[in-house]
Amino acid sequence: MRARGAAVPLPNQARAAASPSVGSLGWLGARYRPAVLGTGSAVVALAAGGLVSFRPKDAVAVVLAAALVAAVLLRPLVGAVVLAVVVPMTSGLASGFPIPHVRISEALIGLVGVTVVVGARRRHVVPWQTLDWVLLAYGLAWAAFGVVADRSMGEHLSLEQWGTVLGQLQFFLVFRAVRLAVRDDGERRFLLAAVIVGTMPVSLLAIFQEAKMPGVAAFIGKLTGGIAGASVNAQTGSLLRATGPFDNWAALAGYLLPILFAVLALLLCRAQLPTRRWLVVSGVLAAVAFALTIEQSAIVCGVVGVAVLVRRYDRDGHLTRWVIAGVVVAVVAASPLLIPRLFHELSGSPGTGRIAWVPQTVSFRWAVWTRQYLPAIVDRPLTGYGVVLPPTIIWPYSESQYITFLMEGGVPMLVMFGGLVWAMFGGTRAAARSADDLSRGLGLALGASVVAMIVMDALWPFLSNGGMPQILWALMALTVPRARRDRTGTVGDWTPGAVGDWTPGAIGARR
Image (tube, rainbow, N blue to C red; front, top):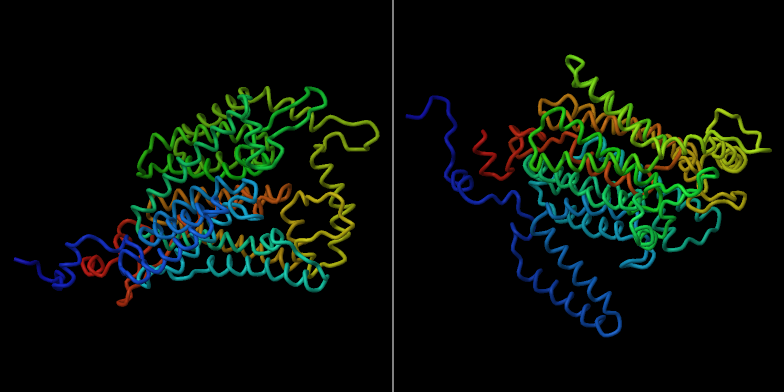
């Protein structure tokens, strides 16, 4: 006998619930269109056939791109893996492969991100929230100021410079596409584990680089076109600072910091994730590689963030004692690298007039800002200069995200950044208040990451370079609570009890 008040499933709902889920399938899986597939295959075949005779690499790239698009349309989660795992670890590679003047990470974001956004069916569309709108406005403002500067100052931008003008919009694509591609809580947990475990190759490459394994530094320099971590110390000679697959150690530190916070928070909140042991291994390797960057601002923010997260979950002080012991051990273990670095930072040079207690990097930055960048900013405080520096700037690196904003779009661009930070805090705060352990842990970890980013941006442009922004926005897409509404007004978020298979049959079964 059926209990009184129990919902009676309709025949269509019962059949849908019993049939294989289509909620996890993509556009092609739900709408098989032979005409579209046939036409697309013919176009790809013609393009590849025309290129193979004189540009075989481009022919292979066309075939691989077509295969990737098809895979994303069939299974959107593939696109989420590419955007959240592959893109961040390749964001530091040099431009030019496979498209001239374009980074492979940017090409992947454009190809996969647009495919996911355009191919999303109506029932899978996640309603826009504050962070979506503010992030889009931030990217459009960056592009608009670049265009205005180009027109008003008579600049002639190259293809690579136009890529910089439009570059901040790629982060919106990462954030929006991951939110659309991940359909339920199970996929979110799988992707989160993939993101964390996927950092292992990056960490191992940085560790091998620091261990001076033969050929590693040259290999990294060829991939990134950068300096491969060479830093000269006047007292101890060459001091190697790990960069991994990036052209700068700061980019590697920015990439690893949110991962460290996420791993720690997930372990402390005891969230149920696949490959939990691999998460611990990934976290340990990431911590070692992070320390090898010797990026002082990131290390200080990392230690403070770890202390805050542990204190949040500490009930009897037991965890705090372990963290203090761990920090002491880490400092002692890293002392052969940290001590020479500190001596180098605080050592004086005759005739410089530098204050003894001010680190050399800070003193150098202050001289560059006050002598070159700030006078230029005063001349154009409301519009900035776009992506082309004025001739009065000799040192081409702003050394600060805030100086970059002022140079790019003046005070209005800095205000846009303030709005973006406010929206990010709103999303992480909502997640931290969730009833779900996973969402709560991620909310605290990403909140700590945003605070660290604000501090670290004072000494390096972390948010507009490779490394931190790609991984940060991918994790943010998996953290910010989302509401999904069907025709009857049913609303849910990331929690397992509210989000599962968003098919008509599953929705009917939950009524």
